[in-house]
Image (cartoon, rainbow, N blue to C red; front, side, top):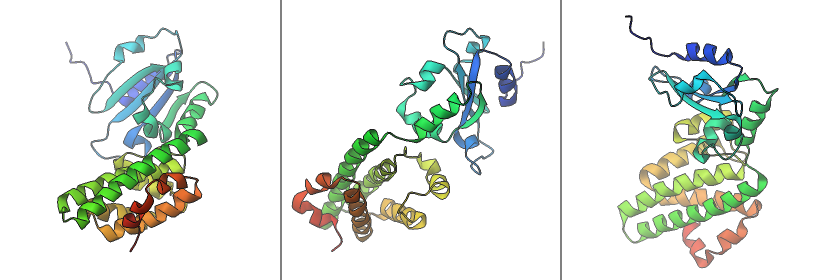
Amino acid sequence: MAAQQPLTYDTFVELATADPAVVGLVLKGSQAHDGMVTPYSDHDLYVVVADHARTQLTRFAGHRSAELDLVIVTLTEFRGPGTPGWERYALARARIVLDRLDGDIARILAGEARLSAGKAFQDASGWLDAYANALYRSVKNHRDGQTLAAQLDAADSIQFLLELLFALDRRPRPYNKYLEWELAHHPLPGWDTHVLLRAVDRISATGDVTQQRHVFALVETATREAGHGAVLDAWGDDLGLMRPL
């Protein structure tokens, strides 16, 4: 008996497209980012099935191989809170392979790419406070001669900074792998991409206090303009340690 051939992306797409229960196919990950594909890149595919539909494709649920990873969900699951929050960026930049719903799959993805004004504001407030806290700890530890602690806190502050900046633009933060790609293709308004990436690199690697204070000055201006002044003012006199000297 001949050995069973591995399931390929093209073969599965052909099967799914021929199945009327399938209402959408969505490709995420490196394959959905121009210029990011490597010899090691697999195909990460969401298979969206009509609610209450029967399909033989469920036998492939959870399939994972070097070429193809499948997630099979119902339309309701794909449309609603059944999709994990950490998938938001992946779906925001995903590619539609099949949409049998007159653009509804595209509208769902567009919704993932854009945070509501209320959620974005709430998230930004939280990330701003977390960023200020990590920055403050870093600068204070540097002042006190705690070099390693200062550097680790500086690295922590960068993750909060990035979450904050993307929330201010009502966008989900990209995974680290796609940060440079995202900023090259979709720059953050008001930020010079090259300057920002250099600062992120230097602060993460060295904990440079002067650089941290310079970035904080830019963040303070941007967040006050966005209505988050109360978060900053709650830090009181401690702001003086974060600002440029």
